[in-house]
Length: 256
Image 1 (tube, rainbow, N blue to C red):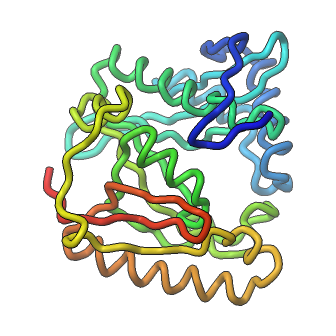
Image 2 (spheres, rainbow, N blue to C red):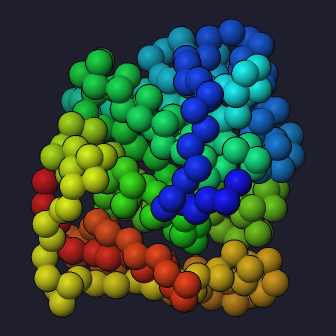
């Protein structure tokens, strides 16, 4: 496929549906191993998908014919007297990436949340995964107000490159005007660029993680310190720029 995250090649025959059977959930287990290369100690077992589907979470799949090309799994949460969904995992097979499947799975999650009167879907993501950051913030309209150092510990996945699993928390306020505007591709008003804090990461960070792990951890440590300081001052990441040299988080003062 000749595509980029900003200009995906859409596959018209992909079918999105809830996953409800043990066979479905077993295929989710296999797919996550294919995507992340987890060992047995890190893989999410079938029974967790069963529980998620039964207690008010979401397990949603994307099919190309009989092939499960991707899935999204959420767990129900409750905070400050209100329900929300924690989208714990979204996986798409490598051969189906940059085809709009991740976005369709997220939109299916949003549609289900809206139907159930749920206003917030949260998930965590690696701040060094620049394409994910662009997708979450610029394509979906999520904001970021929390940084969690080494959330899962160091894992067996080659994608994590042996680094601490630092994570940003994406807040997707599914009924908000911001999200409506982003999904409709309407321009959003924001403060002057001069008032924004900018946190830049080298665009080749994934290669650095593979080839220079000590340098990658230094970059991660600097990033952690910047985020923790800026978020503590009441700012939120509300924009993201991606070019050939850098991926840059844009932070502004933010209030609900």
